[in-house]
Amino acid sequence: AGDAGITYEDAVTQLGYTADALLDEILGALSARDGATVFRVIDDVVRAGHDPRRFTTDLLERLRDLIVLKAAPDAAMHGLIHQPADRLEVLAAQADALGIAELSRAADLVSDGLSALRGATAPRLHLELLGLDRRGDLLGLGPLESLRDDEFLAGVADGGDGGFLLLDVA
Image (cartoon, rainbow, N blue to C red; front, top):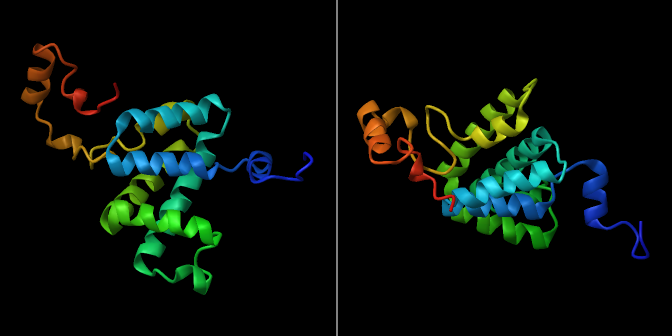
């Protein structure tokens, strides 16, 4: 602890939790369908030495809070969400930006991804691919199973990568 005592950042680091700024950033990127920022945040998490499983757990907990807040705006007054008042405004804005359906869908995908991370030998890879599955993805690109083989091959023939240019990661 420094002269100011133990700061929020110190506590987060010592306890191994994910800083609110990283969760805010990835949720903002998800609501904006900004693939580049999603993958940059994941890269930041891994490069900073954070445990991808802890990050995913914290993201799932944040999604839970947003769902509860969206369903019951006075949830904090009833002890259902434990956040400081200034954070509740941020969370309310995130819940409004994503909406209940997207929050529920994202929580389902993150929960499945968290299960896949247990025992994973390459947790970064699982974290990056977390939202890309046959049902859909966190970036809202739609179900991958709806991509027909001929569409994939046409994308490759046109010099593309088989349709995966849908993610604007430039």
